[in-house]
Figure 1: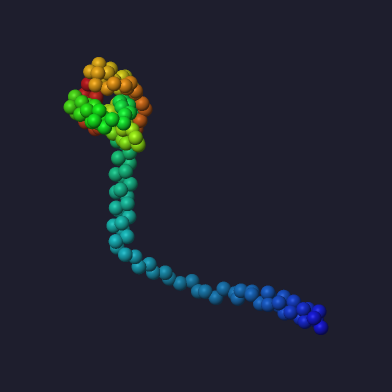
Figure 2: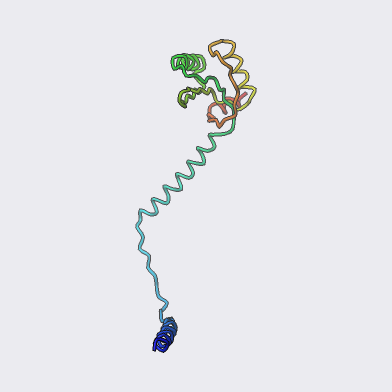
Length: 153
């Protein structure tokens, strides 16, 4: 009896599997109307403007050199060196970062390594920095007025 019942269930289950055939396609081709918000055009224009500005901003940064001036845990000394650099070289950038327990300081945006070496000699000659000063490759910001001055020369 169990075998016959099992056989009937299997046959009916097999029949149900074939019951899932799809009917023929009865959709009719029609007309699609898109109602979009006018603010989408403004958003797309704003995104294009942002992309253009980012490419202009990327052109301001290039590979160059900076002076690695200081790595110390003495905050007062670091501020003294920073004040010296800002007073004597106001056109150059001083970048300080803190990675516990050290304060690290980089100085300047130099396109040429020779220019960085010249500045290194000048700072070393003044004797404010106790340790060594190193020229390190870095991504620098190119100032438009700095480029214009170089083109005039």
